[in-house]
Each structure stands twice: as C-alpha cells, then as structure tokens.
Image (cartoon, rainbow, N blue to C red; front, side, top):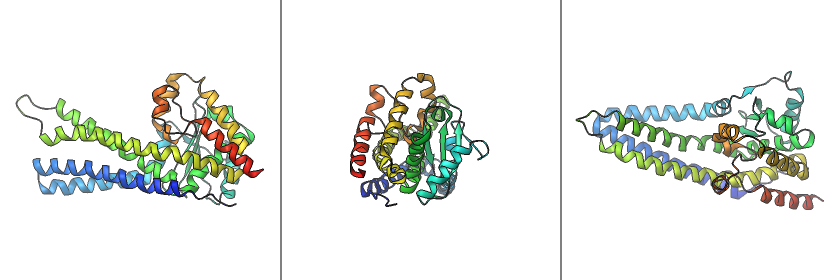
Length: 297
C-alpha cells in the first residue's frame, strides 16, 4: 500500500504545536508573574513543577480520558466480534498496531480516535453509528480513523485540545478570585490581567485547532481510500452520517459537541456551527472522493 504523504498536514501539525505552545507559555508566564508578585520565588518553582506535571499527565492520559468523558467503554472481541475483526484487519492493511476499541451508547452516529502514540490509539464508535452503517461504509469510516493514527495527527489533536482547555480553567479561576475577594481587599492586578489574556488564548488556540482539524479530515479521507481502495464507500458513509445527524435531537448533539473536532462528521448544522466548523463542508469532501475514484478507475 502506497501511503499518501501530505506535507501541508505536516506543516500544519508543526505550526499548531509551536503556536499553541507559545500560547501556553504566555499563560503560564502570566501566572508565574502573579505568583512572584504575591508570594515568593519559591512559589514560582512549585507552580512550574505542577504545570509540567499536569502537562505530563495530560500527555499520557488525555487519549484515555477524552472518550470516557462521553461515556465510552472499551469492548472485548467477544462483545463486538465483527467490529473488532474489521478494525484488526484494517490496522494490518495500514501497517499499524491494533488499537483499543470503545463504544459509546449514544444515538448520535459518529466515530473518532484519540492517541498519544501509534501504539496507544483508541477508536471509539457510537451505537448510533453501528446502527446506521454496515459493511463497506462502516469499514470506510474505521479506515478514516486509522488514517488519523497513521498520519499522527490524532496525536497532535489529542495534545492540542489541552491548551484551549487550560485557558478556560484559568479564566474560571480568575472569576473565582473576583467572587472570593474580601470587602476591603483589592484583587491582585495580575489576576485582573489573566482573565482577558485567557479569553484571547482560548480564541487563538481554538482557531489553531480548527485550522489543523479541517485539513486533516481531507487527508484522512485520502488515507481511508489508500487502505480500502473504495472511495465510493466512504462517500456513501459521509452522506448517510450527515443525513442521520439532521434527525438527531439538538440536546443529544450538544451533549457530544465538546469533542466535535475529533468526529468523522461534525455535529453542528446551524450557520455559526458551519462558520466555526472543525471540518470542511461534506460536499467538498465528496468532490475530492469522486476525484480519487476517477484516478483509481
């Protein structure tokens, strides 16, 4: 199997990590300034160690925590023999270790993958997807997720998702500092500065993640075709998932939207959702798949 190398994706992954790291360092520098100004130099060292420890925990466990935040449960081959057999076969075709397979009991038909290395990937599918797709269409979606692992963009997305999140945590902490001030004591100026900085960091970090996410979906579509040799199956799966998502209640969609950047098809359907979408339009993806089908023919 000749794997398509996309240098645009590689440049975006590198740029995303560098820029998000810069945002993270800017936030931590602001916090360190507050600590230095209102405690001591020793406090800064302690904070730095805690920040590194938290980042390390995130690196090793984010791929485990993200799917379980939506109620995913790892399943054995005895429970889902066909699903496991398909994932194992596709992983062999893609020259990848067989990932962990997890299932979410949710009506929303979707799938995603998280990872901090090629050997630690977890492919998660919803029960809605298993009910909606079967055969070649389900196989194409699973191949799409394996392509994210093969391209290593699943690693970058798993790590990058942490940085906008930490900005929100700091923003919430700043708000608590305001709420918890004593009547005669002013809030430290450093805390006042952190709130708007965190808002900007969250916005910038979210934009970076979206810029990477949109391109990586197109590349993963090509990767799925390289694995299965069947672009029409993936095209049919994308149509089926898009149509089915329109019938899912908004309440159920909002419940999974926090991992929208990871899904094979986004859950937002309104104007704002399309404008800020983490995915290219489905029509554009279908056009590319038709082009690939012509090339194969």
